[in-house]
Length: 175
Image (cartoon, rainbow, N blue to C red):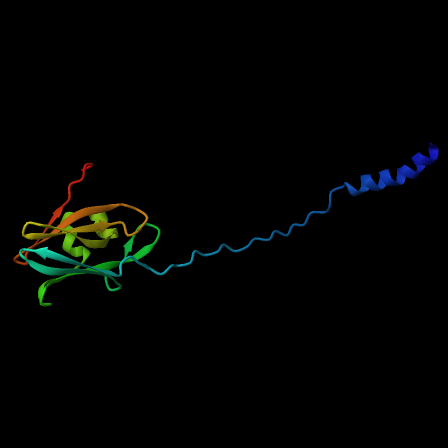
C-alpha cells in the first residue's frame, strides 16, 4: 500500500503544479474598425409597359416608360441612396401619330406631396389605370424609394381627350 502511495505522489504533485496560472501578457491586439463601404446609388426604375385601348371611339396605344435619371437629385430611405426617375407617357393613335407625349419628374407632383416625401422621396412610378369617360387615368406614386416599403403618396393623373392633364391626390381610408 505504501508503494502505491509513493507511486501516486509524483502524479499528484505534477497535477498540482500544472494547475497554476500561466503568466499573462500585457499585449492587447485590437483590429481597426472596418469603415462602412460607400454604396453606389441604386436604380429604382427602368421599364416600359404598353397597353392597347379603345378610347373616344378609336384605338390607341398607351406607353409608359420609366428611366432612372442620374442628373436628378438623389432620393434616400435613410439608409441608402437611390436615383430618381423620369417617366414618359406616350399616347399614340392607331395610325402611329402622337396624340400625347410628356415626361414627368417628381417636381411635377410637388404641390400634392408633403415636404418629407418631396425632399427624400422619388417618383416611384406611373402606371396606366383605366379609361374613364373621355379621360385616361394613371396611378402615380411618389414616396420612399425602397421597394420593400409601401410608404408613398398615391396620386391620380388624368389625360383628357383634348390632351390636357390634371393631377389629384387620391384619398385613402386612413386620410
